Image (cartoon, rainbow over all chains, first blue to last red; front, side, top):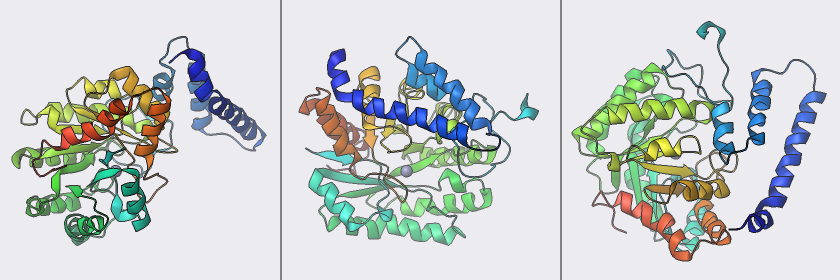
Length: 91
Length: 266
Ligand SMILES: [Zn+2]
């Protein structure tokens, strides 16, 4: 497809998501207390949107992923939160 | 339009969903064993679940003219308890002869722990000993990259397993290529809030090709859309895909993979 055909198909949707992202960051700013590691991870991942190669989705996912290789000893629970928290003792 | 739903947890869905799927062109549904949303209290809970997957659910699907197949295992979310996992592994063989069982799945990892990894290896061993195909769940969100690498290492490390008889499900942009490069199949899950949207799934197909890859809704008791696959076919058409090309992915690919088990007759 041409770039303009893709814009016709996806621009309004992407525009809405972009404004949602901005509003989300504003909302968190207006909140009280300390933000946990997820906010810093989110801001770090956002930098990938400015990349020049068409691998931005992959790069955002990599940025939010646990980069370590060894299995962990015990499950901290069943769920995942969407961003990786570096545990200090692992440094 | 016709398609196969290769990963749907129909025990969590209503008869309205069956009706909608068949109306949309669903030709078969395949149901991997998974976590119930709570931990079962013992092996008897799994025995009952396997009876549901191999006896009751295919009958329910048949009322809508829909062939129903399943995969059996203890899911990784309950594999941290190795005693329970070993008990469940011991009852799986008695169900493997049932006519709608396609193989072992959805096994894999959840939080990438040592116990989960050991139970994954035991499932792979069980599949090898019984000549079964394998369907693998990869972990969620931040755990997916690491978990996918660990899973691929386990399967590649077992020489008895033919890669083309394994599907690694829930791939995204950062894991699709590493899976396809092993010769295994890749699955994309179309979820509203995580995993892939229809647009991203089509991006992955356009980037990495349409060979050895399928799409599923993985509809279950959580936020999920049983019609995600036919809706993605519509999105493909908007993206300029021919009806034949969309059909090859939504119907041809899952049929090709699952037909490696002669029980799958679609
Ligand atoms: Zn599933």
